[in-house]
Amino acid sequence: MKHTTSTGITFHEYGQGDKTILFIHGFIFDSSLWQRQIPALTGDYKIIVPDLRGFGESTDCDGMITMESYVDDLFEILKETGVKKPVLAGLSMGGYAALRTAERSPEKFSGLILFDTRAAADSDEAKLKRATGVRILKQGGLKTYATALMDSVFSQGFKEKEPDEFQGFIDRASEIRPEGAIGALLAMMGRTNTTSFLESTTLPVLAICGEFDTLTPPTEMLQMMSNVKNGEFHIVPDAGHAAPFENFTECNKLLTNFLRKISF
Ligand code: MLT
Image (cartoon, rainbow, N blue to C red; front, side):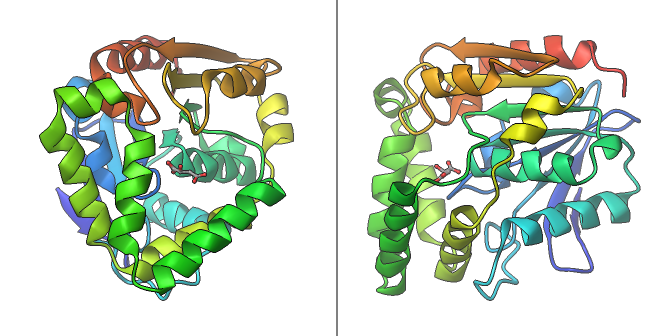
């Protein structure tokens, strides 16, 4: 069922019950990123999948976004649905948002699932790259930008095996309002470092990385997870930076095993 919060965030809700997972998509995706998780989980869990502000159907966006405002939007969903102690799952930029959301109020969550992401803030090099992105997007280059980004997100094997799905992601990304993409770049550029939270939390943490992820590579995620108290890390074969879509069979197995151990 589709809902929109009083603050303009559209989200879909599937399944029923007290055990909820909130899935947060990455850049430049929307809630459709999670379509291969929903059938595997709705029998046992309630699933909430928002479109972050400026993406998908959450079009109410003036381009002035911060990581904190994404987090405010996520808390508003929890407030309006009345959902208690969900597991937060995020991919890449969605992982940045999940980490910061849990850092703000860890007692409100039952666990964290981090796909293809990092806890560190942007390096100067990354900030400059984002500034170039903002310039390209302001000059009307969304399609070129989205095509190049998606090319680096997905593994070669996925592009060859599922060309229509790959093209679908490029097409959806090319159609968003440029303010959404620009706002996301600025939000990521200005986000805080959540490493000390990740290393001190007692929440159960599942981290998953595609073997061919070049944007947040397995070596970097392994390092990120090395001091996490209650964490597990898995490298998923035949996947790039969008592991839960590219190799959903393996990711869904890891998800269900992890979720079975959580006390919600
Ligand atoms: C994403 O997939 O969300 C982006 O690659 C994250 C980023 O640009 O840091």
